[in-house]
Amino acid sequence: MTPPQIRRRRATDLDGCVAGLSEVHRVDGYPLNWPADPHRWLREPHPARAWVAVDADATIVGHVAVHRVPGPANWPLARPTAEVARLFVVPAARGLALGSALLDRARQWASARGTDLVLEVTSGSTAAAALYERTGWRCTGTSTAPWTAPGGGPVSLRHYTLRGDGGPAIAARRRASWAAASRSSGGSSTSTS
Image (tube, rainbow, N blue to C red; front, side, top):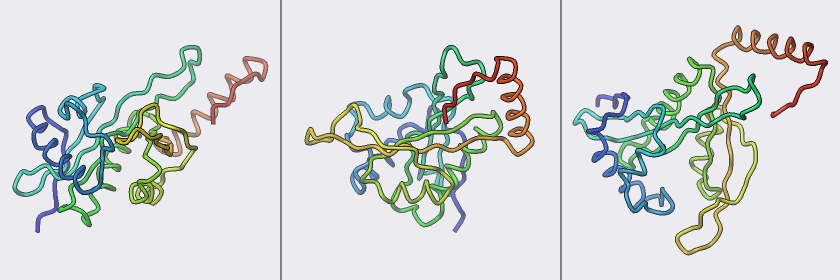
């Protein structure tokens, strides 16, 4: 069996993505609320980048997107951040480590840009949380979603982060830059970690 190929998502992939997402929703309940327009849900907010996993028959079997998150307006040293979103692998393609491979593609993209990654997952999604934690993501807290479950009840979210250092040399340069900025401002700095 030829392993699925991961490549950038094309506009012509959206029908296949919706078909795969429909199967995931039927089996796993993701997304929790089926969108009124699933094509639009996959396209918006406009992703910085999106990838699909395609099997040997050219069927979409997985998807992930990253969306840029605006940084604080008055903090020039804030690291760029992107949100991992719309990650799914169809049930028939599970067991091939596609979830990890799709996350790795997002990680490579972020690392090349010195961008941190964040994501959120419903607290009931234990398999997804296990995947994130197994692949280096760190849970940073929980909150209640601003939207409700299909029955109208509240939805608890777990928040994860992954630092896109781009390697030890870049991280060391950033630490030196932060130290210099702190010295030049009289030692006054705000920590966001």
